[in-house]
Amino acid sequence: MEAAGSIQLPLLSRRRERVQLVQKFQHVIPAIPLLNAGIQGLVHGERGFALALAVAEIVTSVLLLRSMAKELIALRSSHGGEHTAHHGVDWFEIFAAGMLTVEALEHWHTHSHLPRPSFLMAAVTLLMGLFHGRIAAFSTRRRSLRIDETGLRIGGRTLFSRFSVPWADLERIEVDERYARIVARGGRTRRINLEDLRNASEVREALLLARARLTP
Image 1 (cartoon, rainbow, N blue to C red):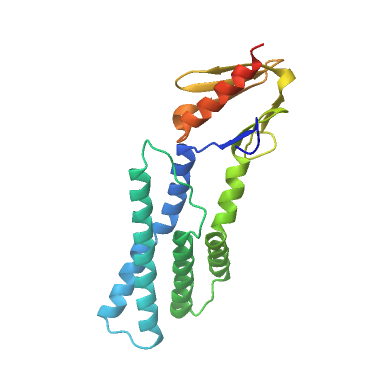
Image 2: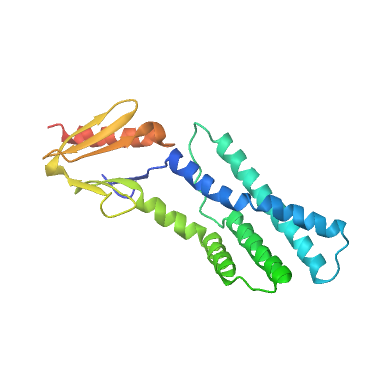
Protein backbone atom coordinates (compact mmCIF):
# COMPACT_ATOMS: atom_id res chain seq x y z
CA MET A 1 0.00 0.00 0.00
CA GLU A 2 1.62 3.23 -1.15
CA ALA A 3 -1.05 5.84 -0.54
CA ALA A 4 -4.72 6.13 0.27
CA GLY A 5 -6.61 4.18 -2.37
CA SER A 6 -3.38 2.89 -3.94
CA ILE A 7 -2.32 -0.77 -3.82
CA GLN A 8 0.78 -2.39 -5.29
CA LEU A 9 1.40 -6.12 -4.92
CA PRO A 10 4.10 -8.31 -6.49
CA LEU A 11 2.91 -11.34 -8.45
CA LEU A 12 5.00 -14.07 -6.82
CA SER A 13 4.89 -16.91 -9.31
CA ARG A 14 5.79 -20.44 -8.22
CA ARG A 15 6.41 -21.39 -11.85
CA ARG A 16 8.96 -18.62 -12.23
CA GLU A 17 10.72 -19.80 -9.06
CA ARG A 18 10.97 -23.30 -10.53
CA VAL A 19 12.38 -21.92 -13.79
CA GLN A 20 15.04 -19.98 -11.87
CA LEU A 21 15.89 -23.11 -9.88
CA VAL A 22 16.35 -25.12 -13.08
CA GLN A 23 18.65 -22.40 -14.40
CA LYS A 24 20.76 -22.70 -11.27
CA PHE A 25 21.02 -26.45 -11.75
CA GLN A 26 23.07 -25.69 -14.86
CA HIS A 27 25.85 -24.57 -12.51
CA VAL A 28 25.40 -27.55 -10.19
CA ILE A 29 25.93 -30.19 -12.89
CA PRO A 30 29.64 -29.40 -13.52
CA ALA A 31 30.26 -29.08 -9.77
CA ILE A 32 30.24 -32.88 -9.36
CA PRO A 33 33.09 -33.67 -11.79
CA LEU A 34 34.99 -30.62 -10.53
CA LEU A 35 34.73 -31.92 -6.97
CA ASN A 36 35.93 -35.33 -8.13
CA ALA A 37 38.86 -33.74 -9.96
CA GLY A 38 39.88 -31.90 -6.79
CA ILE A 39 39.72 -35.07 -4.72
CA GLN A 40 41.77 -36.94 -7.30
CA GLY A 41 44.37 -34.16 -7.17
CA LEU A 42 44.76 -34.63 -3.41
CA VAL A 43 44.88 -38.41 -3.73
CA HIS A 44 47.63 -38.22 -6.36
CA GLY A 45 49.70 -35.93 -4.15
CA GLU A 46 49.74 -32.79 -6.30
CA ARG A 47 52.12 -30.01 -5.30
CA GLY A 48 52.37 -26.28 -5.78
CA PHE A 49 49.81 -24.62 -8.02
CA ALA A 50 48.16 -27.96 -8.84
CA LEU A 51 47.58 -28.57 -5.12
CA ALA A 52 46.08 -25.11 -4.64
CA LEU A 53 43.89 -25.72 -7.67
CA ALA A 54 42.69 -29.06 -6.29
CA VAL A 55 41.78 -27.44 -2.95
CA ALA A 56 39.96 -24.62 -4.75
CA GLU A 57 38.02 -27.15 -6.81
CA ILE A 58 36.86 -28.94 -3.69
CA VAL A 59 36.00 -25.78 -1.74
CA THR A 60 34.04 -24.05 -4.52
CA SER A 61 32.16 -27.22 -5.46
CA VAL A 62 31.19 -28.00 -1.87
CA LEU A 63 30.07 -24.42 -1.22
CA LEU A 64 27.99 -24.40 -4.40
CA LEU A 65 26.34 -27.75 -3.64
CA ARG A 66 25.65 -26.67 -0.05
CA SER A 67 24.09 -23.42 -1.24
CA MET A 68 21.90 -25.31 -3.70
CA ALA A 69 20.76 -27.69 -0.96
CA LYS A 70 19.82 -24.75 1.27
CA GLU A 71 17.75 -23.18 -1.50
CA LEU A 72 15.93 -26.45 -2.12
CA ILE A 73 15.17 -26.82 1.60
CA ALA A 74 13.95 -23.21 1.81
CA LEU A 75 11.72 -23.68 -1.23
CA ARG A 76 10.32 -26.92 0.16
CA SER A 77 9.64 -25.42 3.59
CA SER A 78 7.77 -22.49 2.01
CA HIS A 79 5.63 -24.77 -0.16
CA GLY A 80 2.05 -23.59 -0.02
CA GLY A 81 2.92 -20.55 2.08
CA GLU A 82 3.98 -17.01 1.49
CA HIS A 83 7.30 -16.44 -0.17
CA THR A 84 9.93 -14.44 1.67
CA ALA A 85 11.64 -12.13 -0.80
CA HIS A 86 15.40 -12.54 -0.92
CA HIS A 87 16.79 -9.13 -1.80
CA GLY A 88 20.32 -9.46 -0.45
CA VAL A 89 23.51 -10.94 -1.87
CA ASP A 90 22.97 -14.21 -3.72
CA TRP A 91 25.72 -16.47 -2.41
CA PHE A 92 24.86 -19.20 -4.88
CA GLU A 93 25.78 -16.91 -7.78
CA ILE A 94 28.98 -15.86 -6.01
CA PHE A 95 30.01 -19.48 -5.43
CA ALA A 96 29.09 -20.27 -9.05
CA ALA A 97 31.37 -17.45 -10.19
CA GLY A 98 34.16 -18.93 -8.07
CA MET A 99 33.60 -22.36 -9.57
CA LEU A 100 33.67 -20.95 -13.12
CA THR A 101 36.95 -19.20 -12.33
CA VAL A 102 38.47 -22.41 -10.96
CA GLU A 103 37.29 -24.31 -14.06
CA ALA A 104 38.97 -21.72 -16.27
CA LEU A 105 42.21 -21.92 -14.27
CA GLU A 106 42.15 -25.72 -14.45
CA HIS A 107 41.74 -25.51 -18.24
CA TRP A 108 44.66 -23.08 -18.43
CA HIS A 109 46.81 -25.35 -16.22
CA THR A 110 46.16 -28.48 -18.30
CA HIS A 111 45.94 -26.98 -21.83
CA SER A 112 48.07 -23.82 -21.50
CA HIS A 113 45.18 -21.85 -22.91
CA LEU A 114 43.23 -19.13 -21.09
CA PRO A 115 39.49 -19.47 -21.83
CA ARG A 116 38.43 -15.83 -21.86
CA PRO A 117 34.68 -16.54 -22.32
CA SER A 118 34.74 -18.54 -19.08
CA PHE A 119 36.32 -15.63 -17.19
CA LEU A 120 33.77 -13.26 -18.72
CA MET A 121 30.94 -15.55 -17.63
CA ALA A 122 32.45 -15.74 -14.14
CA ALA A 123 32.58 -11.93 -13.94
CA VAL A 124 28.97 -11.57 -15.09
CA THR A 125 27.82 -14.23 -12.61
CA LEU A 126 29.71 -12.51 -9.80
CA LEU A 127 28.07 -9.16 -10.57
CA MET A 128 24.65 -10.82 -10.65
CA GLY A 129 25.33 -12.30 -7.22
CA LEU A 130 26.59 -9.05 -5.71
CA PHE A 131 23.77 -6.93 -7.15
CA HIS A 132 21.09 -9.57 -6.73
CA GLY A 133 19.14 -7.36 -4.31
CA ARG A 134 18.75 -4.50 -6.77
CA ILE A 135 17.99 -6.84 -9.67
CA ALA A 136 15.36 -8.72 -7.65
CA ALA A 137 13.77 -5.49 -6.38
CA PHE A 138 13.52 -4.15 -9.94
CA SER A 139 12.02 -7.42 -11.19
CA THR A 140 9.49 -7.45 -8.33
CA ARG A 141 8.36 -3.90 -9.10
CA ARG A 142 8.03 -4.73 -12.78
CA ARG A 143 5.99 -7.91 -12.14
CA SER A 144 3.34 -6.36 -9.94
CA LEU A 145 -0.34 -5.51 -9.74
CA ARG A 146 -1.05 -1.83 -9.16
CA ILE A 147 -4.46 -0.37 -8.39
CA ASP A 148 -4.80 3.38 -7.89
CA GLU A 149 -7.00 6.35 -8.73
CA THR A 150 -6.10 6.18 -12.43
CA GLY A 151 -6.95 2.52 -12.96
CA LEU A 152 -5.41 -0.93 -12.88
CA ARG A 153 -2.02 -2.03 -14.21
CA ILE A 154 -0.26 -5.39 -14.38
CA GLY A 155 3.44 -5.47 -15.16
CA GLY A 156 5.23 -7.90 -17.45
CA ARG A 157 8.62 -8.83 -18.83
CA THR A 158 8.12 -6.84 -22.02
CA LEU A 159 6.17 -3.79 -23.10
CA PHE A 160 3.72 -6.01 -25.01
CA SER A 161 3.01 -8.25 -22.00
CA ARG A 162 1.98 -5.35 -19.75
CA PHE A 163 -1.68 -4.65 -19.14
CA SER A 164 -3.02 -1.23 -18.25
CA VAL A 165 -6.60 -0.01 -18.21
CA PRO A 166 -8.18 3.16 -16.74
CA TRP A 167 -11.32 2.88 -14.63
CA ALA A 168 -13.47 4.32 -17.41
CA ASP A 169 -12.44 1.50 -19.77
CA LEU A 170 -12.59 -1.31 -17.20
CA GLU A 171 -15.68 -3.42 -17.91
CA ARG A 172 -15.50 -6.11 -15.23
CA ILE A 173 -13.27 -8.14 -12.91
CA GLU A 174 -13.97 -11.85 -12.47
CA VAL A 175 -12.44 -13.74 -9.54
CA ASP A 176 -12.83 -17.43 -8.72
CA GLU A 177 -10.75 -20.03 -6.92
CA ARG A 178 -8.33 -20.60 -9.79
CA TYR A 179 -8.24 -17.49 -11.94
CA ALA A 180 -8.83 -13.79 -12.00
CA ARG A 181 -9.85 -12.08 -15.24
CA ILE A 182 -9.67 -8.36 -15.88
CA VAL A 183 -11.76 -7.42 -18.90
CA ALA A 184 -11.53 -4.02 -20.57
CA ARG A 185 -14.11 -2.55 -22.90
CA GLY A 186 -13.52 -3.88 -26.39
CA GLY A 187 -12.67 -7.38 -25.15
CA ARG A 188 -9.07 -6.87 -24.10
CA THR A 189 -8.50 -9.36 -21.26
CA ARG A 190 -5.76 -10.26 -18.82
CA ARG A 191 -5.93 -13.51 -16.85
CA ILE A 192 -4.02 -14.18 -13.62
CA ASN A 193 -3.46 -17.75 -12.48
CA LEU A 194 -4.10 -17.44 -8.75
CA GLU A 195 -3.08 -21.06 -8.10
CA ASP A 196 0.43 -20.18 -9.30
CA LEU A 197 0.84 -17.25 -6.89
CA ARG A 198 2.30 -17.56 -3.41
CA ASN A 199 0.44 -14.42 -2.35
CA ALA A 200 -2.80 -15.40 -4.07
CA SER A 201 -4.95 -14.38 -1.08
CA GLU A 202 -3.58 -10.83 -1.11
CA VAL A 203 -3.98 -10.50 -4.89
CA ARG A 204 -7.53 -11.89 -4.72
CA GLU A 205 -8.48 -9.44 -1.96
CA ALA A 206 -7.02 -6.49 -3.90
CA LEU A 207 -8.95 -7.45 -7.04
CA LEU A 208 -12.17 -7.85 -5.09
CA LEU A 209 -11.68 -4.34 -3.69
CA ALA A 210 -11.10 -3.10 -7.22
CA ARG A 211 -14.27 -4.85 -8.38
CA ALA A 212 -16.22 -3.17 -5.61
CA ARG A 213 -15.10 0.20 -6.96
CA LEU A 214 -16.75 -0.63 -10.27
CA THR A 215 -20.14 -1.09 -8.56
CA PRO A 216 -22.20 2.13 -8.67
